[in-house]
Amino acid sequence: MNGTQVAPDDLVSSSKAADPSNQHHICSRFLKKKPPDIYGQKHVIESSKSVNDSLRLLDKEIKKLPDDIRLGLDEAMIYCPEIAASKEHRLLFLRCEQFNADMAALRLAKYWNKRIELFQGAAFRPLSIESLSMEERKEMSIGFLRLLPATDGTGRCNIYVNPLLLEGKEYNNDGMVKAAWVVLHKALETESSQQKGVVFLVYLRGALLRHFDRKLVQHLANSIRGILPVRVSAIHMFHAPYLFEVLFDVIALLLGERLTKRMKMHSDEEDAVIHDNLSDFGISSSRLPRELGGGIEFSDGQWKEHEENASK
Image (cartoon, rainbow, N blue to C red):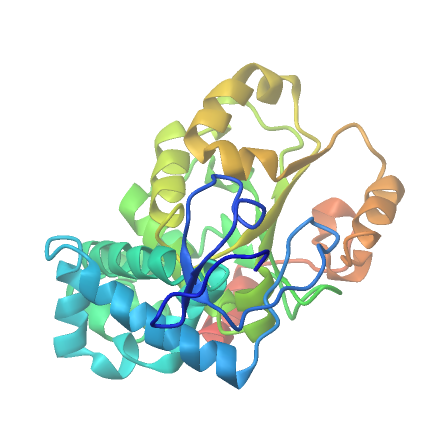
């Protein structure tokens, strides 16, 4: 890696070019990356050698973590080692952190702390709609976050967000966060989304101040950022009203700098223009909801059926 020396245990530090924060991270010397894609993201070229080496490094980095940070992970290793210690589970975090083993270890530990905090005893079973109480399933049926079928042309899962659906609904923020976790874990069942990330499609036409739940946005952002093994490739915002410009600084603060930079605005555009723009990102109009001029229409029954299928 550009002259980086290889340590005795086959560790290498990622260079400044690979990590804009200029920190040195632990990764396998066998790693290679593809050129940036349409979203400007680089993806690791996985091989059995690089994957196995990275898993070995991850295990070493986990052991270096302070006991208090590793508390939830240690508990998971006792009660559900078939999940917490599995290759498939740990690869989620390596892929999210571009195979930087130290960052993946920290995210993995924070994840289990949060997962246990949110789901308690259900945290030690695979997360699905069955992990939610009946009351929380009602909150999920609001449809604030919806996983669209299949993947887009880039191999990413798309998640549709419509805050207008919250109007007049009673919900608990923790319940909404848990529902979001279930949706995102379903997206993570797709290997290409683990590797490349997910794309959010946010519908804002007609949104008013009452539709902006600051506490909910903060809860969601805090439960994802640095915790869930999800790479957010982009947040496409559609028909954002003037209110959004007024609240932009607040929203940017809640989302953080990295997520804010991944926002792509589609304001005052006709459906045909939106469809043309999205096609550049591999998102065809046929997989868009009706509100965006697409072919997908959700009724309550269809949403429930979709979620039941997603939990299987």
